[in-house]
Length: 172
Image 1 (cartoon, rainbow, N blue to C red):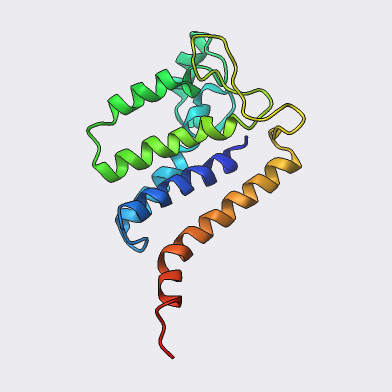
Image 2 (image 1 turned 90 degrees about the vertical axis):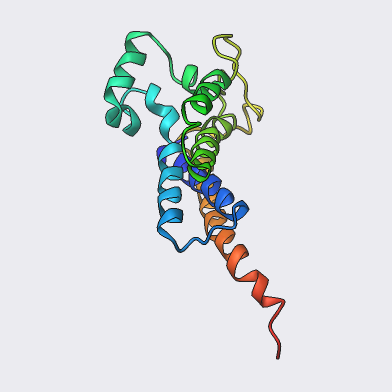
């Protein structure tokens, strides 16, 4: 999946955390959580040379390259997510959950790709959720449709939180 698709998925994860925490979307805290979600959703691609995250976090990307860590292996694995949980325990609860869930959204939606993900890395088993004929190819029209669906969800979640509760309670 492309960076913009992963950003949308990360933003949805952040919105879900804000809704669960009953935190208003119109605060600096929420704005920073949404930004963190967009960024954390793309972070797993630090293992892909040429990706935005590989450029931004070049020392980490270069280290992964020197160690011959391939794309959709270590950084997309449950082992790495466990390490990130441990390393981010010091964060405030809101940012901890936004970071972890947004990061987890990345390998989750990559499971929809025909190449799958090595969730159990270093075990070389690739996992995917869809058969190859139904899988979403990176950069394809089906990914564009999927991304637009994610963007609609990004807009619907705040609407659902702030507008729908008042529609049923209006007195005429």
